[in-house]
Length: 557
Image 1 (cartoon, rainbow, N blue to C red):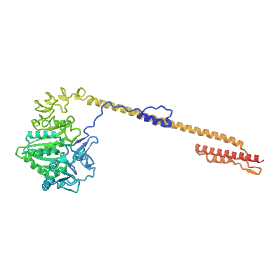
Image 2 (image 1 turned 180 degrees about the vertical axis):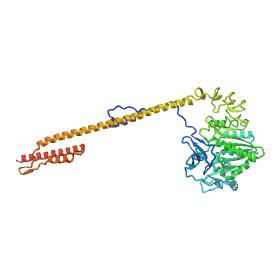
Image 3 (image 1 turned 45 degrees about the vertical axis):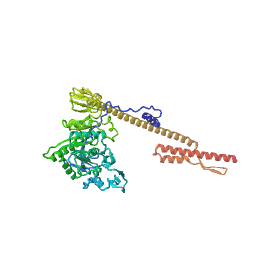
Image 4 (image 1 turned 90 degrees about the vertical axis):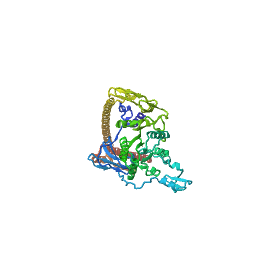
């Protein structure tokens, strides 16, 4: 399609008519596979200066590897429209703010438990109107458009409120009923008397409805709408990547809650694409608060973090010996792909006892006596690794050289001494990229020389055309001079004559022409030829007039 358009444009030009169309040479195709851009942004952990804050609390310090600069940005939102704050950290340590985002003061009032308190005032037989704009309930009527709800519905705000779908920080996906059942049974098996739910409102609602004796709950989330449904002693607004409470009193209430529980489980369901390091620091910070709050009393804290298995495997390397990954496939009720068992990639990353997660009643799982945990039905145990190594259900094999298990599609490479997919050898890819760079440089040099050649051709063509025009003008001037010489011989002695009372005055063209010729010696040839042609036409017109008058006179005689 592109070559046809090039051909059409080529022959539209007049100077190209009669020439042969040659298709433009395309750049060489790369032989190396395209390099995926991974980890352009990374967090900076060794900064000891003052941390900048936006209107959503303390910021994170990022490093842009491509532009090679460090800057502070919002820890909640990754979209500039939601939070445009950005402060560049220069090499000399100075900070340059590149946005006009004003840091708002911390709110002094939070609507903790507005709805439960209001329900006590509304008669049980009265209709209840929920206003999503005011985040309150009213009896019978309200000025804003509302919805008639029941009391049990108000105990499940995650099913009542509109789900946020902002993929840059506040996308909300809720556990399915099957996953809620597995998590609840794991908490019961672990005999935890305290549960902190970070960013998992539906789990908090489900555990709250169970009303188990001796179990206390606390809910942490950035979505302020849930504060209206839960009392202050069990909920707070919280930034999970910076361990920040907008309400300073909320941290005191959390510490008071932690002081009452001996076995604590922290359950975290972060957004997809979260930075694992600051998240794990916040989880550890809550565990440290629990230890401090308990003082000399016994304090045991575990955690469950829900992450995709390809992210969780990196966390396992950083926290080796503390965490392990369950094979259970976590399902989300309102996710397009992760609502299906064979599509979800989310797993449970935890440090709780392996026997606490019992999947005997869940289809598709088996108990591995060697690992002492439940694994997927098609997962096989590797004696060399001491683990059931498959994370996505695909078969694996052990590589004796790498001393690790890999997927069957991976092969050991002699060039880089590691296992990888075919065509993914870093050594061979580097060689191929160097070769591609040489080919591309050669092609660019060829294109540059071709442009120079075409430019020289155009300059030569213009010079030839200019020379031909000058020769043509000189020829026309010579012809005109020859014609003038002949006319001078024929028209010698022009004078005024009178025929039968008619006086004919002949124009002394020769004298006028000579005068004009003297004045226009320095005029360019093109103008000179033009004026000569005009004078010639004037002479011809004069002769025609004379001939006509002669004929009339002859006829009159």
